[in-house]
Image 1 (tube, rainbow, N blue to C red):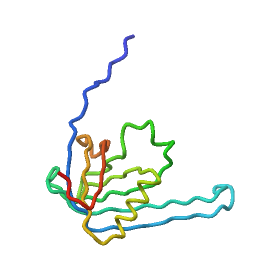
Image 2 (image 1 turned 60 degrees about the vertical axis):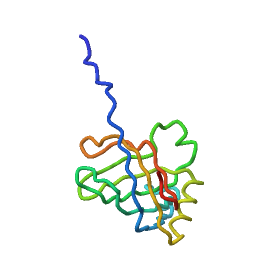
Image 3 (image 1 turned 120 degrees about the vertical axis):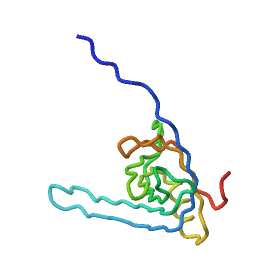
Length: 141
């Protein structure tokens, strides 16, 4: 019996520029105890919140979680993150290398406007791959 072939049609790539107006930095650490937690676990993240210049389905606000991941895990990946939801705001997660995360943390503490540029696949059922992500103190062309 022949198997049905999946469509290889690529989704449309969307590019949006915006300004980050609020940062939230958080750290989580859990010590080792018992059978379920055999080793210490720790995570750090930065929430970048703001507004895009143009709307996506009538939504301009965004909340992007920036997380640190080892470079070895990220080298072969064709995406930098995921758009997780497009409901009341565009929510997503971006994986950064340790060096990139340190720069993002420095930008979060500057107290200056930070501009964002993000390109991602047209969301399908509310999610899509983020293909590129950049933040800078200079407005992007």
